[in-house]
Amino acid sequence: MLNKVLIANRGEIAVRVIRSCRELGIATVAVYSQADRTAPHVLLADEALCIGPPPAKESYLDMEAILAAARKSGADAIHPGYGFLSENASFAKAVQAAGLVWIGPAPDTIAKMGDKVAARRLALEVGAPIVPGGAEPLADIKGARKLALQVGYPVLVKAAGGGGGKGMRLVQEPGQLEAAIERARSEAAGAFTDDRVYLEKALAEPHHVEIQVFADSHGNVVSLGERECSIQRRFQKVIEETPSPFISPEVRDQLSELAIDITAACDYRGAGTVEFLVDREQNYYFLEMNTRLQVEHPITEMVTGLDLVAEQLRVADGEALSFTPADIRPRGHAIESRIYAEDGFDDFTPSTGTVLEFSAPGGPGVRLDHGLRPGLEITPYYDPLLGKLCAWGRTRAEAIARMTRALEELRIVGLRTTTPFCLAVMQHPAFNKGDYSTSFINDYLPELVASTQASQEELHQAAALGAALFAAGEHRAGADGRAHRPAESPWLLKGRESQQSE
Image 1: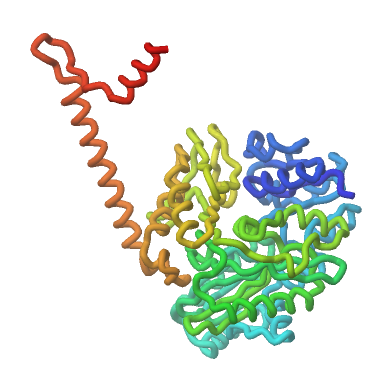
Image 2: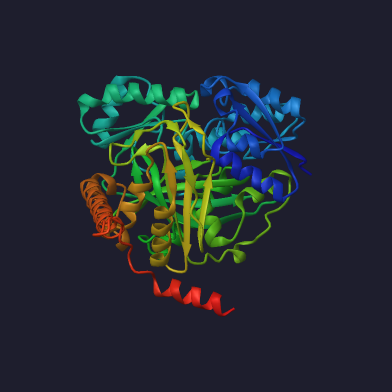
């Protein structure tokens, strides 16, 4: 059995993995850069080892430093979380070569499905439609121009070896293509140490729908249902929900079947996500497969009652899945708001600084996965995700109401976050109707800004009125020079009478 797991990651996902390990009686080892020496995941783990300077390339992307930490700590397994080296086949292979358990799919599977071009070929083999585009990475600008004209503008330039919206550029016209390829390659190289890119058609106003799959080494492959991930900025998700308010039950079943076929065809093991684009007529196209745990996995946990991290640990340890397809009966509705250190009303400009105050929301159906504490320094070195606020309800309307309340309760002082933006989305009519696509932010940003400004103005007016009443009532001086006090509450008087009678 697994005895000690090193988490090769940071922030909220490292905290998340540590908690599931603790419930299973597994010791944990945190790694950290010099910038994260007092981060919550470091303080929560049983052990913690520094792996280098703040830049990710010199710490969280340094394979040898992480393996050295594993050897020094005596860990027998590595959980990569998501991002960083989680979809790096070379790292997975090096972990196994070091005699450690890799908590994820086999290196060959990561290489096959992490290569978006190879994944498209496999999807075609199992009968899944794909978005029109190239079957190979772009070799030169001449070939790229020819392919773009064939599929028709607008097109997307996408990283072949990564995900999470990084290494992606939308190209509206031929004159933008060369610069977009260069920028996508540069970003992909920095994020994934792989600068290959490919090209595909950009669909108009699609929905981004993904299927959570799980497989073990005993031949079991299951679908845990879909997540709607269409509220995005710059191809990165901001708000997700399950079930999707858009697709039909028939399309849901078809996507699940295709996801299971694709998962089985690549000899998968562990947690994975098969992503699709669905157009306005509910025609669907395979997009990619993420060979790791997704950021938005908590909402699937909320509707299924499963602990996906614990399941990852069991499967990596050679156990069969602890559930069958018949056990999967999603209940209710769940929504996730990603809390980024960004200003959602200023083109999602990153924000850095010190967390001066932090207060998490609570109450029925609310969950916040985070890596925050007062005094924590938010630096520019890493992804700006601070936490994932999730809300569950018996109905979609109840989930939205709970999310709204939770966003209003969440307090992070010291830097700008996407909390106000997510709150504005929850209150927007199109979102409440479930009538939105990946173009939601572009379509409605002016309305979201205006609604927030109006809310802020109401708050300012209420504050001014309260101050005026306070000044007029509590501090108004009488003829005798003493301040008049407002009449005391009858509830307070009643309480005093009760105390006196006792």
